[in-house]
Length: 331
Image 1 (cartoon, rainbow, N blue to C red):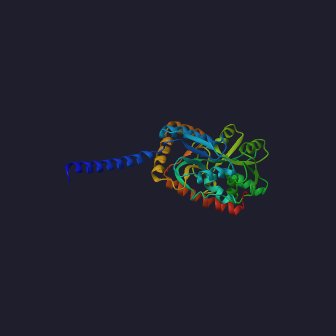
Image 2: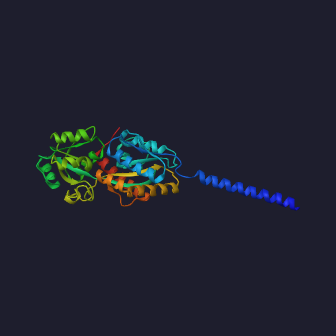
Image 3: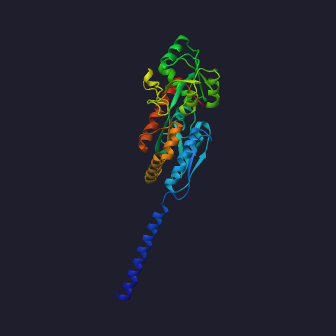
């Protein structure tokens, strides 16, 4: 082969190699994540505690990722509409959900028809934490502890009632679980939202309620409600002086509302890892710590995706048993 021929062939090989390298680099560049805004779905209306926490997280996450994280409210059917939207989205990491106990656990046994399975339809990203519920009674009920409340019910079976924010809400199932564990006969009075339920408790129209500590705290501090027990395994950081229901004779009683971030099933592992790191940094920021503490949220100790996977399964199993025993069904 002549020198010119060898130079021509060598140049061709180098050009092909350069072209291949360029293609490879182009593919790597194309895989950069995130390259556009991320939709952060909240499956509830604007203005509630879930929405407020999601917006706080989204602001900090925007700083961490260098891309906008936009909160999108897709409310309805107890969170099922937003959850279904995310479950059906492309699993590329650009559609995520700030889920709670409802769409990620309770709704599975509660609704006759549900289009997704929280155990298999999502890719867990991070466990954020939980919001403690608290058992409060009207100030003039005449009881100061869970044991006294149970004794009052035994003396007047079927006479005491509890308000909830609606059929199937955690505030409803908290009472169902309490009745099952304590052998009480509290009558359920459902309302269309927490506000109306607590207004009637203030007015003395109902006897008690299981509600989130953020909402109850001002009333407790003002002496308008009497707090009998925290409905979680541990004391609340916001009001550590209130004993837990579990340590007052009902071991294992826990009806906290947990929060976690998920994406559609089948997300790439590297994007899950990147998002998990970004969310962890956001949760560790002073802005988020202060804001979440003010909301009464207890930070999750284990932020790995595997923990959220395990928690969802455990909670689905737990609430399936409660719902079936109580015969509670929606739609």
